[in-house]
Length: 274
Image (cartoon, rainbow, N blue to C red; front, side, top):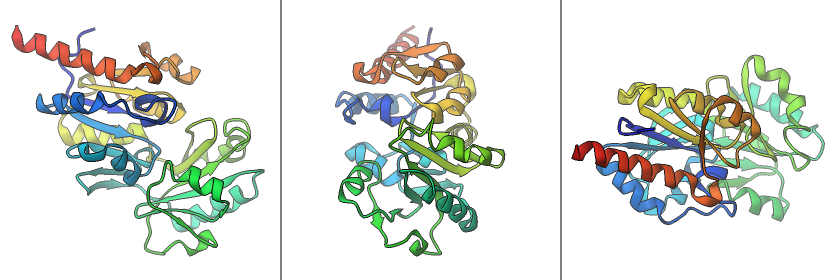
């Protein structure tokens, strides 16, 4: 395959760009700079909060598009581009059902902050790995009225696909219900998913599906991989992803995304030298 036509690259974070320890390979930063220098746009699409994604990119976040909270919130250079939020009524309907679900805890993703009502220190510290701006409340009913609720996230230590997903599956007729990892279930507006966010970006940038590449590893990446010509499932991806795309990248622990980005740079260099 030749990738000299690629103009937009989108990558998931956990299980994809980050290794199994949640670390970002330092080789990524100079490659990002090279991609940007030849006019290729790079975007991060993740279930994580925007503030956390920006923190992970350290001083290299400038001109990167962030499709945060599974595409609910699109930001570049701290400027909001698009937001999809749940009504407060619907969010609290989901919250109440989650409270009744065995062994589950909640994280509510807002545009300004994330919120939890579980004060157990071990849980709060775990959640802080994914949500940089986190408020611990006595009750989620204390979430400010002016907050945009982007996503209701359920932490399910029993296994989200088997335990909590079946309980919330009935909402799929009007909401997006996504198993985003072994222990996380995300619920958002029907159009609030990575695939829709990528399509918004493509339209805004004037980039076609054929000029777009994406990388993912879990079920919340399916629509994103389907919205591009070159959708790469990581070697460590959920089996369902290998069914929807023929394209494979090495595992996240083998820096699979970086190896493919190097191939993109090589193909562009060959094209420019020919």
